[in-house]
Length: 168
Image (cartoon, rainbow, N blue to C red; front, side):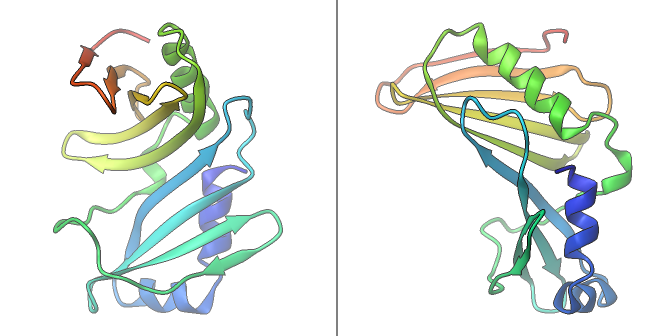
């Protein structure tokens, strides 16, 4: 499922339309995958309501749209995820992330792909949780496809390696 399709489906819901009418916006988009999964079957979205300062989660698949209970954001500042300025599609970001993570030769347990607005533009973040209690983080510029970060961090040891700015 393409992200744009998930957004369109979510925004048909009355509660989400109500948030958007109050100058609310899409603030989160992510999916969790298995290592051998290349096809995205659904998305987890979050819509921010500036009047209540709450985020409403929405699960979207081909079969259903489920709007959850609103809650307060964990971070103080909430950014809008604009669907129009993303040149690199989610499927390509996942492929690129897997290619970069594969160079580390670590056994992958699960993958999380998210789209975020950063100060310098839009960014896909692909997080790989390994079977040996470490994480691989790959950050991809969503507008030009350049790898912004490639890092590995141990969740049990005090080890961290980071590679920034490598070309895609």
